Image (cartoon, rainbow, N blue to C red; front, side, top):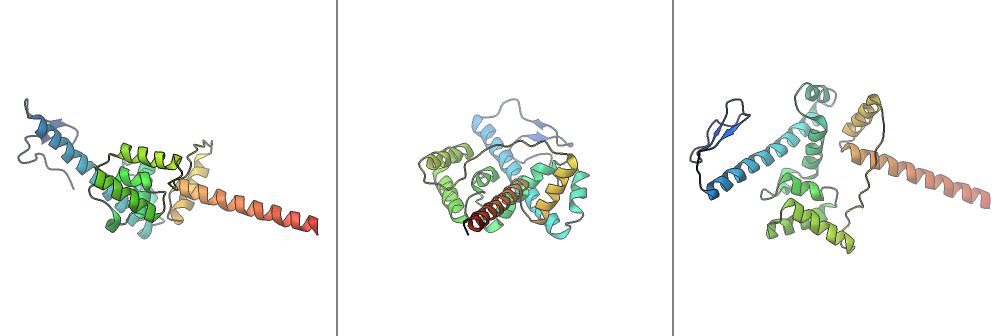
Length: 203
């Protein structure tokens, strides 16, 4: 599917190769703003479409979709992020008035909390940054379950990274979520082992 070369009534032209946008020498600012809104809406819709497209490939071609993506010009990690959000929000739970980035801000929360924040953002007309700011403020007050964010950097081989990504794909989750789940499981197992050792020593 390609975007048409001209948008009727708007007066702007997209080049045939889709790499440039031509605007008239003079247009009213409200028209210019409307064009930007249209372009932004089209770009955001495309992120949902890409997410759904990758989810389809993950579900139906689990052994082949990764190679198919590698042969395109699309960034695999970006697509994985889109797919993760698309899975978190099936079509019936998406808010057309909000961007995918709004949804991304709440994707790690419980579904009820997600809906609450998205409802507030939609009713208040909040930008993505405003939604993020309010969630952080609520977190500081202890009124949100959004997890504390820590950035970890690991030096791993490409083979190991690919192995982890494949495992995350099989689990139908984002790589970061898969890593956290594995670490949590390992930590719980270690705690249980230590508890058993203490009980044995006490006996």
